[in-house]
Amino acid sequence: MGQLLYFMTDPGVPVTNNRNLRGAAHLNILLLPTMKKAILFGASGLIGSYLLHDLLNNGTYDLVTAITRKNLDIIHPKLKELRGDYLSLPELETEMVADDVFITLGTTQKNTPDQHQYYQVEHDYPVAVARMLKEKGATAIFIVSAVGANTGSRTFYLRNKGETERDIIALDFAHTHIFRPSLLLGERKENRPTEKFFQKIFPALDPILRGGLKKFRGIEARDVARAMNNAAKKQSGKLNIYHWQEIKDLL
Image 1 (tube, rainbow, N blue to C red):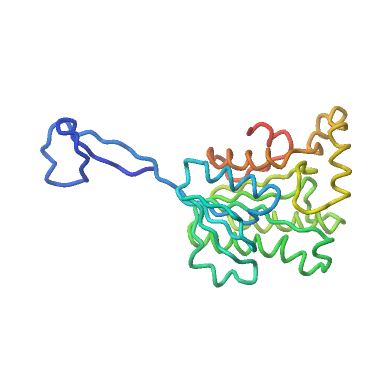
Image 2: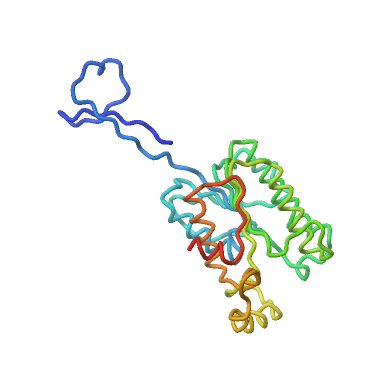
């Protein structure tokens, strides 16, 4: 949808929808695109940092709000930075307004060994902000999950991802986009020796990961971010789930 701008071809001066112009000759109508607002949770992470850059350069949005725990050190006319986390959500609620919601939150069991706190970051926080923004009018949500996410998984990590997906879907957004990458490739700010080891060997496994196994291929975090941004430009389908191939198709 868009906004209507009426103008007369003779003087060429933009005017509004005014009854006095009812008899004017050569009245043209121009449909201007309606700008949208985006909100991003996890802007300082591996995928989130790339996604923030893409959203700020996406002409669809006139405002991009980033909720972070630390200063991003970014100055941009479209960026609104709010400092906060799960516990401070009530204080931020009045300032959180968006059409499209992007969630790239995540932690590790090393950084958050307590399972209750881990679940809070990986499940409670995303679901809480999604519910809050849906009630305030958001129509689309884009969230990073993981390949193998399943509420019935014996693995805490995958079961948690599955429960998060389930509860996000239950909120019934007009458009729900779930991205399920396997190993993320890219340089993180924090040191993850085990992940770095697998990042070196995973590309060599790509040739043998074919057919249904393609979804287990490693993928650049930059590509996941680009895919999320591109998916936001197309907005089709009620529920969309993206694995390796579907993410690549969006690039």
